[in-house]
Structures are given as C-alpha cells and as structure tokens.
Image (cartoon, rainbow, N blue to C red; front, side, top):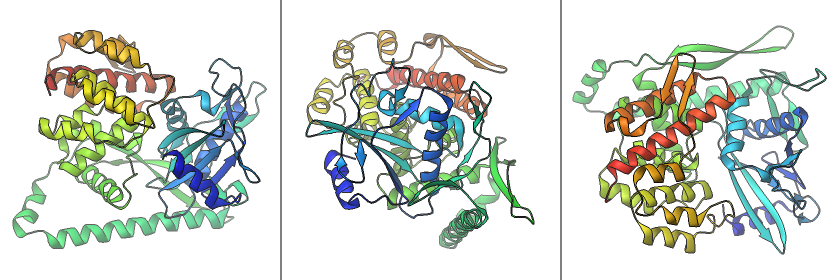
Length: 438
C-alpha cells in the first residue's frame, strides 16, 4: 500500500468505521499485559470478520472526525516503557501475533507523513481457515487474566466483541462453505485430467508430518468448545493448500502466504511440484516475512530468479530483504535503483551505508552484516551449531527444511524467533554460493 492508496481509503470511509476497518488516534501495544491482550484481540477480531475482501485495516494516527491526526511525538521510541505500535518492526509484530493466534493472519505495516503528521496503516490479511483462535494466556502481575486460551473475538462496526452462539455458527458455516468450494474446484481439476495423470495418483507417497487443525463443538446450552486435533498431513494436502494459495494470489495480487503456512511449505518443499506461479508466490511471501526466499529461487533457472528479484512489489519488508540478495549477487546498479525509486524502502532503520559496504566482501562478512547474530539454535532434542562453511549446498537446503519443521512444533516465542533467524542465515549462506555471479 502506498500513501495515495492509504489517503484514498481514509477519504472513502468518511470517518465511519466498518467491520473491516479500525481507527486508532494512537496505539500503544506493549508495556503491560492488558495492552498486548488488546492488540491481539484487535488483530484477531479483524481477521475473523466474515467478509470476502482479502485485507482488513488498522489505521493508526487517524480518527473518525478529522481523518489523519498524526501519532504522538516519540511514537517510534523503542526504549519507552510503554511502546507504541510504530516502535516495532513489522516482523516483530508478526511474531507477537503468530505466538498468540492460530491461524495467525499475515500483517504488513506502512508508515506515511501527511502535512507533517505521521500516520500508519497496518494491513491484516484474511485467514484461510477461520476462526482465528487465541493459543495462550496472558496474565498481569496481580494475577488478572487479560487473555484466555481458545478465545474467539470478532469485529462489528461498533467495535470488537467475543463471539456469541449465532456468530460462532456463522463462522463455522462460512468455513464449511469454503471447504465445499475447495472440494468442487478439486473435482473440476480431476475431471480435466487425462487418464495417464489419474493413473499416477495412486503412486504418491504420503508425508509423515502431522498438522494440528482446529475443531469445534457446541453443547445444548450454547457454549462452544475449541480444540486441536492432530491429522496426517499428506503430500496431496500440502500441494492442495499451495494451489489454494496460488488461486488466492491470482484473484488478489496482494495476497501472501501466512508465516505458518510458509513454514509448512519450507518443511515439505521436497514434496512440492513448483511451477513459476508457485515459486513467485513462495519467494515473495518469504520476503514479506523478512526471509530471503532463496530455497524457492533455487528451484528455477538463474535468469528467471534474477527477473523475479528485480520485479518484486514495492513493500518495505520485501524490498529491504531483496537488497540483501542484491548485495550477495553483486548487483549494485539495481540496488541503487531500488533506493532511488522505492517509496517503501526509505526507512531510517534501513542502514544503507552498511549494505553498500558489503558489496565485494567475502560471503561470511556479508552474512554477519546482513543476517542475525546467531551461533546456535535449539529446541527440545534439536540442536544446531550454525557453522555455515561446514555445510555443503544440499546440507544447507535440508537444514532450512529441518529448522522450519522445528519452528512448526515450537511453543516458545523467543525460540521461534531464533529459529526463523536461523532460516534467514542459512538461506543467505546458500544464496552466497548458488547465486555467485547471477
């Protein structure tokens, strides 16, 4: 989203809040458990709106009467005791949501200045399998529970509220209708297959990975129960989900795969049949989540990978992460063009000089400068010492997939963040080798 689109959205609303839009004159989300709980509920309630539009919006620095009013001075102060949303990077906001909600909606943050007033738009993508449910409890220092596990909040035009029986049944029916539509698309695809292709279906080998799905029940008094059920995740299901993601991208060019599903694809990448549409979606979705996406770019021809790198959308997380790839591949001219032409990349936290200094440097220096300071990562029985020079290309690919599998099972926020950083570094190490001279 660019500034003109944001102002057009605000103007179109005319001060009225819709179920898919929430206006905040200021927005503090960290400092005590109540603020974080409200942030999680705000995002969840937007994600659970039963609306066909792909994106929902949190407008920060805006109100119903005056439109853009600007956020408070010091909103970007990361050392403040009570932290404003604008003091966070987009990937940190995503980590908070992914640790508290399942499925976690994809977020993107866009900041602008209008007539000296700073405002922002936090875009919340529609979840593929509603409802979006809380996965952990938040309790303050006095023992008051601010967020319970398995809560479901939804947004109405008047604000957010916890679902009642009727609203819950509407969500379930909406989910069932999505599954019916998906089934009918699958039937149509089978009808279009030739006999030889149909004959190969029985030869497919299932994967042994497991996935938790959300199930519901409503008792006679109208109370609902949310639970997780472990189901076998087969090759066909993973491929089916990817096809559904591609279909959504074809309908909405601004659709990106959620971080959770992206990790599923990373974990099972060897079982995926990737065409150009799949590679572009997965690479751009990785970049959207601040991950280089090199595992996906590695699945296509070098010229095609170079073309994709040079044509990504102008969004801050995507363009700044692509800059790392441009440094790895020595493409200084395109790097400079991005800096001069991009509206999204002009961010004071993007260290342009540091990146420029890495052109022509050894790969280990580039990874140290552009990756995360991480020597080792572990969770339960998994323990990995990140000595990149000791791994060959195939080992790096396998480790990227392995770390994604561990991320899917991890329930510790800080460890999940480290696992994600490990994937970033492993991909940079892989990219330094396979894209040398791209």
